[in-house]
Length: 159
Length: 83
Image (tube, each protein chain N blue to C red):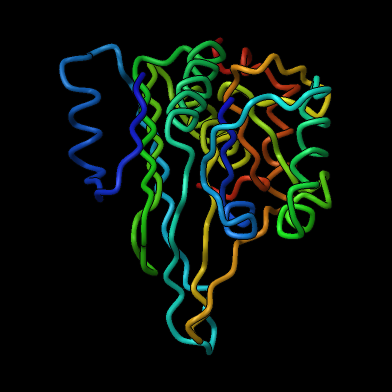
């Protein structure tokens, strides 16, 4: 149960090892890694800069993490989100959920990334390749993905 | 109170963070935004469409009718695009 906001890259294997070390109640670990996708098309570079709201970001990530732990029987969980300038292929976000059973781990991981996308105060500024940049617009499909967890308490995976 | 602006709201207003005294007559976030719009064309333009703005008061999500007493941290920003 921890969250980190950092400029530096992360090592997924090392994070999983550190998170689960010594806990033999864990039967399954699910992770999600978000990468910078090349949206540049024929305009060249599609690097982006992630801005966030220091203070509130950590608070919201902790709230989302606590919600996942309340809904599913997790043995461990982690959210790492980067900020600053990132290039296509770079890792942006890491979510890990570990539980005695796989269903809870899968569902909690999915929930964490869906909620994070619409509730954590991050904004992407995308370089358009001609020296200009534009703010990425929020997508309705992300709201829908987050909303589907509103009605589902996750209790079924606890069985 | 402290007022913070992020992403395109920061760019359009030209301000990231400022300290202001609660303007007279302002009781909620809607009132604050109205007051801010009167400060100049860049504010009027950035804050024209409140449906495009998300609000946090003391780092918790808030709405236009969230009341303000004068010692809050108010943040104005577009819908989030992290992850």
